[in-house]
Figure 1 (cartoon, rainbow, N blue to C red):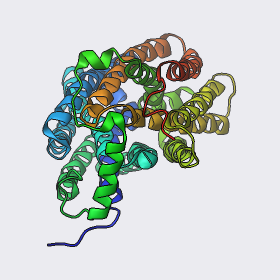
Figure 2 (spheres, helix red, strand yellow; figure 1 turned 180 degrees about the vertical axis):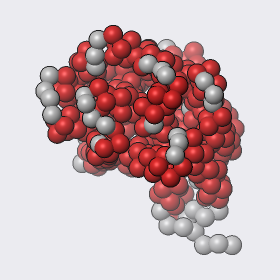
Figure 3 (cartoon, rainbow, N blue to C red; figure 1 turned 135 degrees about the vertical axis):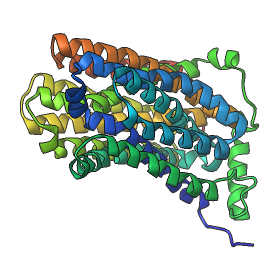
Figure 4 (cartoon, one colour; figure 1 turned 30 degrees about the vertical axis):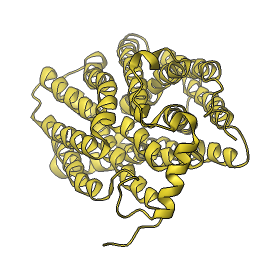
Length: 421
């Protein structure tokens, strides 16, 4: 028998971190190469928006379905199937010959990728005590920022090497298939993992039992979940703030062009906001975990990060009124850092508030809400940017997070999880 692995949960967290890295490579290939793809097919912003909407429709529907799917079949099997599906979908994109086929392949990609974040929430609930859950979510969520930062270099490198955009989607798909055996070799539930030390298993299970709402692995009915104000606080706040992040990830190259900067010559502009978001993931998770260890209630520690994050996202308004490359990149960096801190808390809250058997379901509901919000925002961005400019988009994106933070304060109420000291 192989010996136990100390701090096994963090090794699992490291493997899970690679999943959103690959996930965002799949997504960002389209955003980074958007100017070239638009030029080849002769699309305007409104037609390009349809590609994003196709992905988001599947992603929105899929998050609720995949959340319950993962709670039913288990994370090891369910996430392996999902990653295999979206990796294959990415590899189909080079076959696109027009708008309809391109939208179809992006729809399939969105359906597969919808399991990623509900899966992360479930893994955190299974493997990490509350005092460490903020750090664990930050580690996983930071993979999206790293993937987004790597994508421009990889995409343009492959574009130059092969003279076209299609090979980039094949490479990202292959990486997903390589990840699956690594994940399956290390992931099991703590109750049954043969490489988990008994002392660590006891700590995990005792922490889970100490939480009144975490005493069982029960799957609460949707009717029960939707009657809880906490559910709506999580769902609506994510619905309002995720479109801001996806504006950056989906439209940044086109926004740079509108400001007179060539994306190929402005890789720093891509790199800094995504790296700032990576810092924000760890700042949000780390600060809340630090405050909890210092004796703060869990709810208070989470909420203070949300308020600070909403304030920082207001910096997106700056490029609407101030010109200059440094101001543009700096304001986007502050906004993405703040969004990532806010998002880390939203991803952590289901594990704070719900039984382990319902965590992925609630996370999936919030993902569906975020998908609906992003679909609406994407349509509006396409229309407004074609007919007016990006200025009103930036102003609106600065105001919405304040509303989201207010809903967190109002709807995430005191209970046995949020009152924990």
